[in-house]
Amino acid sequence: MMASEIAEYLKRKAISVDGIIPLAGDGSARKFYRLLQKNRSFILIYPQPGEFGLKEARSYIKIGKFLKRNGLPVPEIYDYDEESGFILLEDLGDTRLEDLPKNKRYEFFPQAFKILAKLKEIKPSFPKESVLDTLFYDENLIWEKEALYFKTSFVEGYLGLKDEEIESLLRALWEKAKRYVDFSSLLHRDFQSRNLMVKDNSLWIIDFQGMRIGPTAYDLASFLIDPYQGLTCEEISFWLGDFQRKYPGLISEEAFYALALFRNLQALGAFAKLSREGKPWFAYYIPPALKSLKELLKRFSPEGELLNQKLELALPH
Image 1: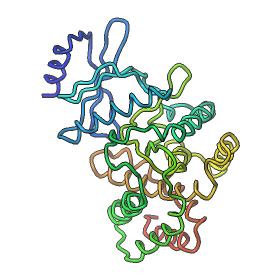
Image 2 (image 1 turned 180 degrees about the vertical axis):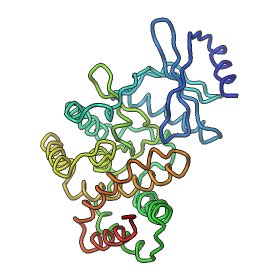
Image 3 (image 1 turned 45 degrees about the vertical axis):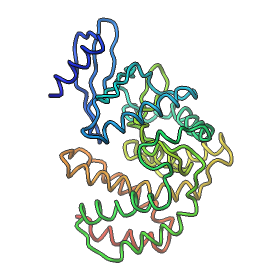
Image 4 (image 1 turned 60 degrees about the horizontal axis):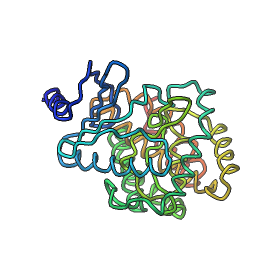
């Protein structure tokens, strides 16, 4: 069915190709294909099934065009088919930031920081009608999508730990962290090394269709505690300081670590869920994400230490 739909789309758009190569996906239900012509190639995004897939495609188009207009490095959109949700894009190649050696990766950190500062700058002109979910990534959503998600998917679903005290500890941690939730920036919400492509010695943003308004510190936290990168505590501290020197007053240390803690909870919930849903390779990233969480929890005594103790007892030894 998928092949016939792609053939029909290409015929309708009068696009001739020499070959179609399926590309490996990641956590998304969308499908990606490289369309080959003699001297160039394109990327075709096949939406996930149902009305949500079509809505996601519309958000991708509106937000992608907005970012491009404002000078952000996103792929060129060549075609969008409203009926099918197919999107034809510039091919950014296969090199993600994650794929580079650590020292080489560091060369692109200033570009990543510049992107985050630019997202805050252009927030006032964000087309609010383009959002895929809610306009604001607010306190209730962070509690639900980060803390409770961690509890149900990782603590209960992965560790098999049923402990009523877990939620109260998370709630106490949240009471400390939520003072740093603001609505001062555009939020990618998955700003990590697998969503940053490297082409022509430049960083390019992908997977931006879930963009909304939220805390400035969240995306930087996502980037620096990214388990795919595996930065040490010392490296995270160094690069946070570098960001603060380049963009003074934009993100405080307190806000960074508060949002990093809850982003880390979300990552563990996601890795646990995806590894149970037929993508077992995500389990590989649970140990580094758990190590990062333990270091972050040390900053939030006494609740963080108590949660650390409970997790340690539940982990296989």
